[in-house]
Amino acid sequence: MKYLVDWFGPKIETHSAVESTSCISANRLGVHRKGGDFLTIAPIQVDVLTQAVAEEVLRDGEATIICLVPKTSHYLWVARERANQLGSDVQTMREVFWALGMVDPQGFLDKDVDSTIRILGQHSRVERVQMICESTMKVVRLGGMSDVKVSVAYGYEFGEETLVKELERHPDVDVVLNSNPNGRATASALEHAKHAGVRLLDLSSLMGELRNS
Image (cartoon, rainbow, N blue to C red):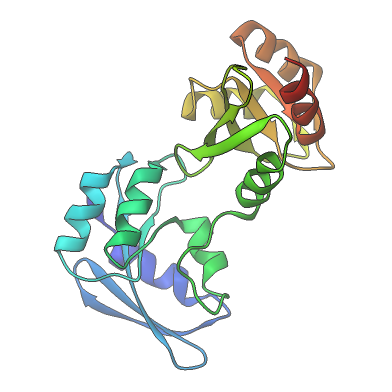
């Protein structure tokens, strides 16, 4: 694990909701938001942010948010839940940038993931949606139907390269969901999905498959 306070400060300071930033220590960045409130962020680099990593970060001091910086990294949902228990939160850098504009930045979840959880949770054949990491979830179905592991992605023209990257990040999913309602999968992406043994679907198609298969 590596702290990225010096790198992260200039990036976050450009946010429209941020008045200024200050380096509190080698592992904490202070963020003064417009309106007067003050947040403490622990920006880190680690391949997988586990519960143990979250606990280690918070032993170093309080943090409003533990920010996972690399786009290719993951935080496990149990790590986020543990951070919540300790008065903090775990978010990706993308989530932090959105959350800074919220009254309460803690608890913010990527909008595409959040809406997917909400919609799938309303399905008549779904018992519950169980988060695994920041963008994957297990859909537990009723009536003895098999669970479905879903990865949420976003793309306008969802090509083979995008799918390959998504499967590298989430290799054990059953479905890659393109959450963009205006997106479309290319023929090469659909062919790659077929050979990889996964389904590349939009939300409407996924809702149908949850009912019928």
